[in-house]
Length: 157
Image (tube, rainbow, N blue to C red):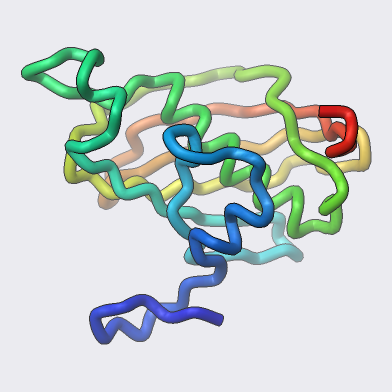
């Protein structure tokens, strides 16, 4: 298990490099920097995304008043859910987003924010599933939604 730098003793469950071995996404679409908590028995995972002013989407998404696009917040949540699915034993498949339900955007996400990406598996099977997800900045919920996905063999993509 990797450890955070800077003398912190809080464990990193999965590093960025390990996430890249799980998810097919790459810059600028890899939106999970690390996984800090995972409980496979309870189908729960928490990932982190450090939102920096250098993100490419800030150039065009409200220049002068940068806000992280809502669809990218949902994508970050879906990616955290994808890591959970992989860790549940579906490592030969990729979770592909099918549906977003009950999405609510509660607060803008700004440069400098650290997103905590929480996903709880409601149903996961060999064909797909559903997660309840939320992103927080500090204690404030910034977005929440239920995300459904299909599991597709990696060779089919």
